[in-house]
Image (cartoon, rainbow, N blue to C red):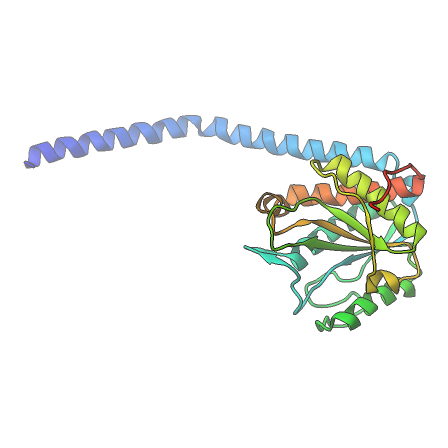
Length: 258
């Protein structure tokens, strides 16, 4: 290609590049305005949801509620892609704690960091010892509710939905599990799961109504994407919080799975 032809081609390319950049700069204020409005709308929606929840949250005032983010330290729990169960559930537990404090409740988190319990003991990864220690922390402060927060994972990716488990034979545990499950189903569709009984050390050793809340399946790509979203984690915390209100208000819930 001759030099004049090359200069002409380069000149046209620069002109096109300038026009594209110019158009983008022209639209930049509108894009920034749209982003600001979207952020404001999202925060407004969250504020409205919180206000709605707090309208009936008086039943939680001065109630001591133990919130146990599962795993921690050398025990990561389930892992899929970049998501690690111990991190996901700690974030949800901290969000739930803020809601409980706003309602006038007295929450206790069994851990607030990756590798240490709130009483200063290090998390060792010894499963039996750690589960017993979590239950003992709740017993020690005479908690009225014990919530252990986990995330699920299966070899098959088709399973999805948050589910609550309670200790077999515990009538109050069943009522609590059904109340939280009802709110998870109502607030975070699609989910047709029901509360389920089982035998769990951490629930067996607590002296108060206790449940395990599995917030979803990291092994399901769509649900994993939602669990990675801070807004979805906030909604999970709100659903669990709403379930506590439902339990204390005595609102009937769909029965547990047989």
